[in-house]
Length: 75
Image 1: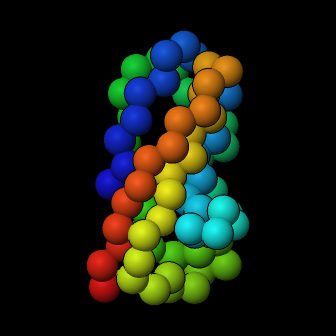
Image 2 (image 1 turned 180 degrees about the vertical axis):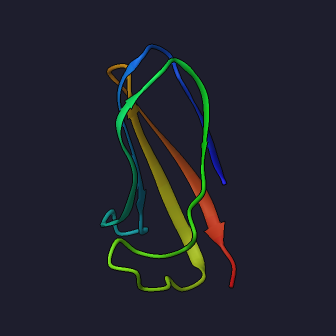
């Protein structure tokens, strides 16, 4: 589960990246209302492959800002 806050209503993009900076999955790419939101990442890539255990980055673009977070996937 990835929880995030959007400061103002508008376009939002939430992506999961590997430690090399490559996009693994795009979880959100549409407008959202301001406030708190939650999205579930099932540990799969965009093409449906199960990703290995390891460290991944979450990249959020919203309200003209970019934020990053780290997460660990354990299988």
